[in-house]
Amino acid sequence: MKTAKKIGLFGFGTVGKGFYENLKKHPHLPAKIEKVCVKRLDLPRIGHELYFTNNPDELLEDPNLDIIVELIDDAEAAKVFVEKALNNGKAVISANKKMIGESLAEIDLWHQAFQPNFLYEAAVGGGIPIVHAIDGFFRDQDITQIRGILNGSSNYILTQMQQQNWSYEQALKDAQKKGFAERNPSLDVSGMDAAYKLSILAYHAFGQVPSMKSFEIESIEDVTSDDIKKAKSKRRKIKPIATLVKGSDGISCAIKPEAVGPNDEFYSVDFENNAVSVETLVSGRHVAVGKGAGSLPTGSSVLEDLKRLLQGYSYQVSKRVKTVA
Ligand code: HSE
Image (cartoon, rainbow, N blue to C red):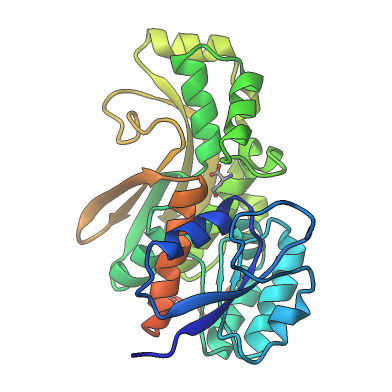
């Protein structure tokens, strides 16, 4: 019997609890949460058997911990914790798309410098295993385009406005209540959350990161009930579409609400579901659909990363262009 790897978990919010619940359902896995670091120790919590602290160094400096799972929503603090954990020889899993999307040039150096590994499947597409697919399965294929619905909250809001005639505000409130939206929901609705995710996909698909300044980004806040009705009258739905295209003059990235018809691959992708289609020169178009936000789906992606870590898996970034910038 293998010795169980010891996990230090940062954050016990929506995704942290989802990871904890998913892990509990797999008692055979040789991994155990030893310590949890949270901001507030006074809140009532599930997981009474767990040890909680509010001192990050109790985890980061503990030589007995093998793996750090970082699931907090503060991108700056997350970066400090992840880097320190890697420097201290720990494997790391994160779901922090803002931190990862903003720091890919450094993260590329971390991938080359550190062993054990740093994985972040849950940062993109919730429960859809798209980072793993692009970095692994599509490693030797030329990807020409990636198209996706990468923000569950925006898709949920537009779906409820279309199906229930809800106002934008009512739909946003519900997305927050269900745990889909970020603590700062402007990241979701402005398109920034999807932009971070698209950057992560660009890094693994093309080995380079287009400057965020070159992104064409449009918020869903400007979509009115009238726009939704007009689209509906033409049998169309407005969807938050992210597009990444590799052309002869470079990579172009866009995130904007688009009216799509019944023949579009994303027409039936409603509520908090996400979808990603990957187009390659050799094998054509591949489409994956699944829950893109929420506690258990996102927590299940974190669990998949844990299983991969236990098998010694690491990202290859095989298309790495010499300097990622
Ligand atoms: N707020 C994010 C979303 C959560 O709505 O997609 C998953 O990354």
